[in-house]
Image (tube, each protein chain N blue to C red):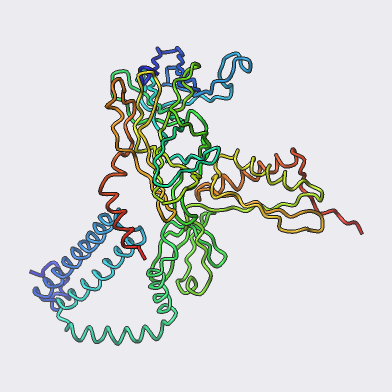
Length: 265
Length: 262
């Protein structure tokens, strides 16, 4: 039966052990494939019913739980005692827990993130000086793709400890344009003109109304803040387009931008 | 607009044109496919061709057999928020009807020469340029089109200069608030409305109901009367999503209101 093995190995392995190993290997491969299939199917079924983030979390939970279950069944098939295994696993868990407190705090942070939901997969966030699109929220870290196409992994502990700005949480946004006009400018007319320019720019919303604030009197002119509202997806269109329009229309209508005079010593 | 939808057919190497309210649509067929352009009409004093010269040809690369361009009339894809030019006050317990004119949209589809069923539109173009506005709070609400309108108390008839791209939309206001209310904005739920053609050629929608509630809230619904039953009226366009305001959605809204009542 074992003639295909080299002669020096034939004495070490008996037929029964080999069949057990082959059976366990086959069961291992099939079980892992089944776990992946269940996780994939659950993700597909739930994709339209729950958020991307919840579907991804469920997929990963099924994967990890299935893997642990398969491993335990396989080890018990190989003749290892399950209670002894669990006991060993417990000791290992305590040892690993003590040795990896940072990872543990990340995991706890991950649970907070999942329950608090400050952002979801696909949101644009700014955290610890990094701005980008959230790719995944995992138990240890979140993954962000920045706008210049870099992959950034931020530990959950950092997210919990620092300020996170979710830029796309609400469907509309306000963008503030600040500029300085010369002293003596007709400010009521300026406000009217800004309203006219805003109503001509199709990406802007009529309501909520734009915010007009005279911020103060600077050393070389009146500081103006003009905040316009738009659907969040139109950010770049408004940022560049409206700035260009202001730059073109205000000086042409008699409101040149005031610039700090150069002082020559 | 007697025979909507309109079709423009062109032989290989030729160019045809058709008017659609304030728009002119050009269509030409070349060996490589079909091209079309949408132009805004301008007074002939400004331009000899009668159309705005800044139009751009768009090339359709789907089906080389495309033989004709279908022009259909559709209502705006977002609700239209109408701001009255002058304040409108409604007495308590009264239902009034006003008439607004909302812009129609041109839906363009290219028809292969051997098919009569139009495929989904390539694009939808407003006949009159519309601004956008937000209905709701800054945290939650819906995107709408914005229209400043002088609301009339009678339905306007057909214009002697031809169709200007607008559709008459009856707006009912019911004041349930128990005191006189100033109406600042009205909503036309355009996705749920049909376009109907009156015997005199006027295009109208069915009515939208704006109900002013006691606590200062406003709710919106589509009028239930069946305008198409009137003799000589013809349905031009069906609602995009008629089920949106159905009884079960109202039921769910009611349950949500009850559950969040404090």
